[in-house]
Amino acid sequence: MFDLHGRSAVVTGGARGIGAAIARSLADAGAGVVVADILDHDGKETADAIGRNGRYAHLDVTRETEWREVIGIAEDSFGPLAVLVNNAGILDYGAIESEPPAMFRHVLEVDLVGAWLGMHTAAPVLRAAGGGVIVNISSTAGLTGYAGIGAYVASKWGLRGLTKTAALELGAAGIRVCSVHPGPIHTPMTAGMDASVAAAQPLPRFGEPEEVAAMVRFLVTEASFSTGSEFVLDGGATAGQVLALPTS
Ligand code: NAP
Image 1 (cartoon, rainbow, N blue to C red):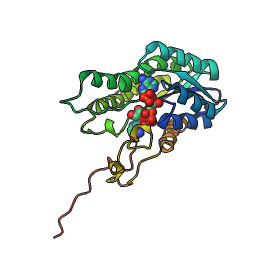
Image 2 (cartoon, rainbow, N blue to C red):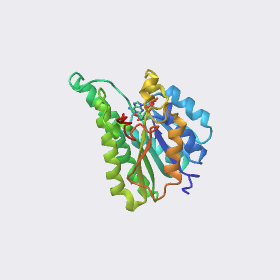
Image 3 (spheres, rainbow, N blue to C red):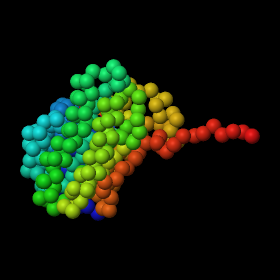
Image 4 (cartoon, rainbow, N blue to C red):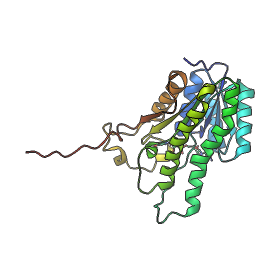
């Protein structure tokens, strides 16, 4: 088991939703956790609720200088960096024919370039600390296509590919890198979605942020022989199709 006591973790988009659940879970496992987000008010509340193992820091994942500052805050507050969770993400709707190019670029900038900047900045620090774990929160949108959210799909497929490349580049330094692929989860991001989104799944419900956090905690603390792999929590949504078989 990877002992997180005396070591630090950074969770992006940690103010609310899945990121907040991950931050709480890693703090319970002993890490000092920096809740990093652009939502300062919610982020402070989440970090305060964690207590002495939590601290808020402002981070826009698209800004390289802020990345360096946040990792410095994590190490100064809690000890050597052990974990980075690239969780921050945005979802925008737009078909390929109608989406403004600036919107497509913006989603890629946050969801893909932001995570790349995180790995780019954290990897040398993890290497110097003797190893660690990076978990990238992708989506089932990184496993299949979805009409109307092409930028999000492109970002999440990209993040899945970057995860594998990072695993290849960083394994010898003792750094594991995995991607997590949730289906619909109850968070502010999905607040406007209809329950029918999950109706055809073998488990016909939305997941909870704590279920994603449990997977991330397992990957960080227990999955010592896993790297470059996808871990799916989608109620079976991507398992396949139920065929209407001929009756005679
Ligand atoms: P959420 O509730 O919207 O939380 C995401 C957090 O990231 C928010 O606090 C958001 O702030 C923050 N954020 C946005 N842009 C940022 C930036 N540039 N820098 C730093 N933080 C930023 O979303 P969630 O549902 O918990 O999603 C978390 C991750 O899981 C995302 O990567 C998402 O794509 C992925 N995911 C979610 C689901 C789902 O069903 N919920 C399914 C699959 C994958 P703002 O509110 O200001 O944007």
